[in-house]
Length: 201
Ligand SMILES: Cc1cc2nc3c(=O)[nH]c(=O)nc-3n(C[C@H](O)[C@H](O)[C@H](O)COP(=O)(O)O)c2cc1C
Image 1: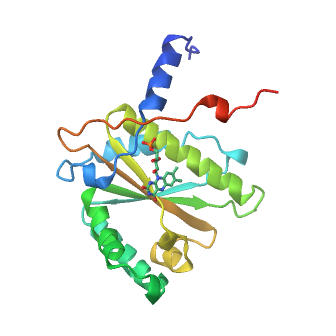
Image 2: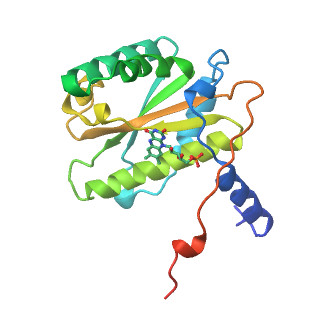
């Protein structure tokens, strides 16, 4: 394969990176289904992320159609089981039950640590984050909304049991996918100046 030359390829990739946006389930068209082949294509792109030692630590649990109801109930049960009474918020409980149904697809983003332990856990998590970025960039490139949602309830032992994860696995959040509601303007964002983050030595 020929190595693409810039500037055209650089302009293209810059556009994809800078126009990638978070679109939350509330702004997704839950009536418009997502093709399974398309979702698998996006996940295949996710799997092309860098991986130290080729451990490929990403695991994806895809909840679509009625499975989303199971996920919603699971999230609510986890919230009830893990939240001390004084911190319990009915609005939070309600949101956990409705959010998975607002998007056509919710994906539990999981990390499976290599059982030999040769790669540090932080590096396996970093690799999964790279995979999520591939997924999100691929989605945005075709105008599909994506949202990575993290929650303390997913970082618990009970969550591992509910999601049927193995002992070496962790859930790093949920990634929602869905077409934006008709008429929704693609969100804009900004980043602070590069000078505040880069030091050349
Ligand atoms: C690891 C990770 C976890 C995130 N978790 C949440 C979350 O729980 N709730 C939320 O509103 N946004 C969450 N976000 C999305 C950010 O809010 C979003 O990326 C940020 O506002 C910048 O918007 P953009 O993605 O459109 O550039 C998360 C992003 C990352 C990378």
